[in-house]
Length: 197
Image 1 (cartoon, rainbow, N blue to C red):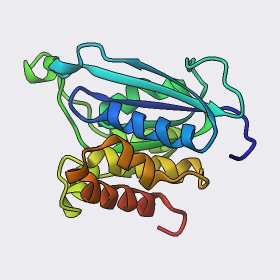
Image 2: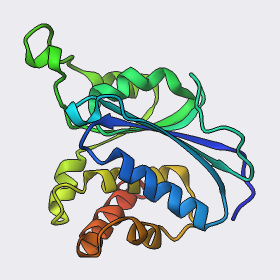
Image 3: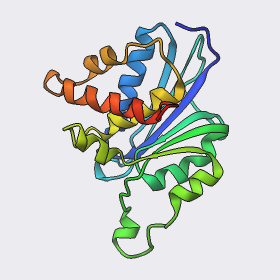
Image 4: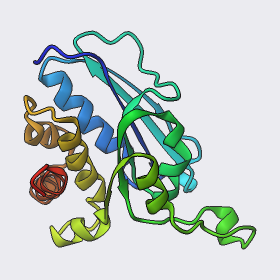
């Protein structure tokens, strides 16, 4: 384990996108590497398409799992509009990893309002942003539902935490029959977010 100051990661998405699984793999890998890790989850109405938020903080010593406004080092959003909604939590100079997937909320579906245009462009104006079509990338790896693991790979690259056995962490959190396909998704996400990409 490297001696590092506390890092804060905010993962946001919509119920059913695998936000919690990605958080568990992240936490499992960091703990196995010797980091002090604190994690907090908010499920909301997640099973009905509501927001899911996970806060993960890690470092040499972490006192609290909670991330206040302006404190997240990395914001990972599994749905485009959720990134904009949670942007106030990102610290100045922080990074955004966002899935380009759009999941209309109930007010949009009912015609009360429209899904906003230009969210990715607005995110790029406000923060260092990596936008990924994680659904497409996961499908290319033979695991259409693995977009959460693609985003996890991109997050790992953004954090620069290279002393963790991420393959072992993934293996400990997914069913054996899905491990190989998920590993391809993780590697694809790492590649997309690496400086050479």
